[in-house]
Amino acid sequence: MNPAKPVFLLLTALVAIAACQKADNAAVQESATRESVGGKSLPDMRGVSPGKPSAPISMRYEIMSNPVVGQPVLINVVVSSQEGPVTVYYSITDRSALIFQDGQVERLSIVDPSSDVARQLTVVPQREGRLYVNVSAEVQTPGGSMIRSMAVPIKVGGTPAESTPNGEVVEGPNGEAIISLPAQESN
Image (cartoon, rainbow, N blue to C red; front, side):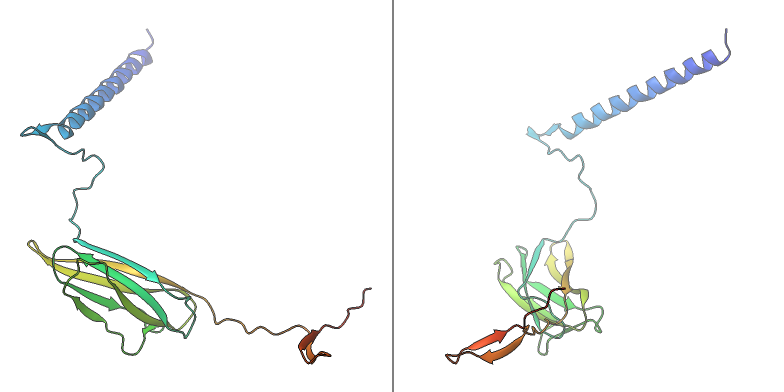
C-alpha cells in the first residue's frame, strides 16, 4: 500500500467533517434568527452590524448655485429629528480654501426639528477644486447626547471666461450691429 494514500484519505475525511460542521452551524444560526419570542417572530438580523447606535437625526443638503472662486455659494441644509431640539454646527477645516460669508452663523439651535425646513448656509470658495464644509447636529436623547455629522462636498470651477467675438462689430446699412468676419484664403 502506498504510504501517501492513507494521509490523503485522512485529509479528505477531515475536510468533509469540517464542511459538515460549518453547514450545521449555519443552519443553527439561521434557525436562531428566525425563532419567535412570546409568539412574535424576530426580525432577520443577518448582515446587520450590532455596532454603535446612530443618532436619531436626518440630514441632507442641496447646493443652490454653481460654485465659482470668489462668489458666494448658497447651500440649503435640512436637519430633522423626532427627539427634540437640535443644535447645528457648521465648520470649515481649511480656511485658505473656503470661508463663511460675512454674517453667516456657525452654530444655531432648532427648537422644532420635526419639520423639514431648509436652513441656508453661505460659503465663499477661495480656490478651485473639491472643498468641504462640515455640518454636525447634536440632539439630547434619553440615552444621552448624540451627534451626526456630514461633509458637504463643493466642486469649484474657475471664473467664467469672458467671451470675445470673432471678427469685428460694424454697423449695417439699417443701423444694426453686424459682426464682420473676414474671408479666409484657402491654400
